[in-house]
Amino acid sequence: MGAMAISYDLFAYGESLLQFTPEDHHRSLAMRVQVLNSLRILDYLTSLDYADLQRVAITGGSGGGSQSMLITALDDRIRVSVPVVMLSSFFAGGCPCESGLPVHLCGGGTSNPEIAAMAAPRPQLVVSDGGDWTREVPEVEFPFLQRIYGFYGREDLVRNVHLPGEGHDYGPSKREAMYAFMAEHLALDPGKVKDKNGNLDESNCTIEPREEMLVFGRNGENLPGNAIRDFSTLERIFPYHPPGEAGDTGRRYIPGPYTRKIAVCDWMILKRQKAGAFDRAKQIGADGLEVDMGGLGQRPTFDNHLFDPVVRKQFLDKSRGLGIEISSIAMSGFYAQSFPTREGIERILDDCINTMMLMGVKTAFLPLGVEGDLVKYPERREAVVERLKLAGQKAEAAGVVIGIETSLDAAGEVALLEEVGSPAIKIYFNFQNPLEAGRDLCEELKILGRDRICQIHCTDSDGVLLENNGRLDMQRVKGTLDEIGWEGWLVIERSRDARNPGDVIGNFGANARYLKSVFK
Image (cartoon, rainbow, N blue to C red; front, side, top):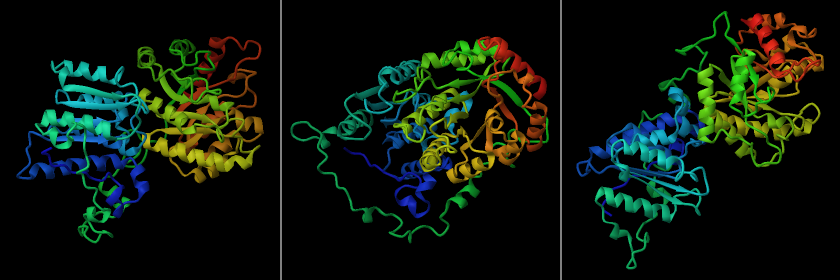
């Protein structure tokens, strides 16, 4: 068609595996390195004498679509972009190479359509299909892009080719749409890729043997002498200090006073997935709200309305307007459903993590529930660990934490976390569990320590209010939390007065006032 093209490996893929492992691709640093690779390749291409700097374009499918949007947003040298099967308002890719630390939570929260809109008013074609997360592009994401391009008076420069009967690939029909768009805006000759009947003909394309495409040799013998050859070296060049660790420029743990806020669960105050939960939390006197993902039952996934941008905006507007933060997202459906054996677990986890990213929430609550009780059913441990490893990988990719509630004692939970081996899986501690089992709650907190506990359900079983609970010494609890240096959200789940369990405002309001008197 008259263009030169370069295809390059993503980080820890293809020939990049001479330097890094496949596991390195699933680390948050992968996104930064891939972006820098793309920019350096762009530097190289535009330095060539025969390159036309006015006709530079980028395209890619899936993760390549993410790169296409990112590089176009970052560098004005890209004049035309065609992201394929990737644009979505609710899904950022599910991989650290696409989400980083993640970038989609920066600045109060953003999404790929906003990143793609930074291409305006440069020509952009969005290719979508009916078989993945781009299925709603014609109704949701594309009108948004048109509106942004409209500010420049150039709605004609952004287009969408939607293939409702196709799935997640960069197949012939998607390539044909891309070829036509590139030809139009780069002054190429589309006739060179058509047969006598005017149909796409790629038969002249040569797929070269892998060995001939290896730039650095079969075993990396042609790598430069100063090439980075392991991830630890890369980390020293691009250091990252997680919140709370030495070198972090943000908030650090210091010897008191500790920040502890009080939240309530929307399903327990009878406002599950309702924006009115924020008003009720305000009446109760809480600082925050744990928002549930909705019922699960036998559905393929949660009955979650937060993917609806209208509903989501209502929630976020209420949160900001009333000053009630969203402490966490809850998967309470797993109290009754089987975490070890439930079908479709990957989609369920993806839906929760994507909801967290859209809402700007860093912590999720996952009870292992009755069917995941590892004390009663130790034979289910392998399945639970396998699924928690999957959850940890996904949570690490998104830069969030999933807090699990188990029936194990603290030592058992430490062993479970070590077996899972993910910093994104922590313990969501519940006072009720050690109290019911006759264990010393404060000793359990000390065994777990500050860094293994993400949040706390700061309640006991129903019967009496917290201030009247004879088996729960809240002052001792506070002293223990001070001793281990823990701070975060204390979430009221239960502890209703048996004499009047239906008085939501009365029960939760009394508990919130009591906790604030102790911890604030």
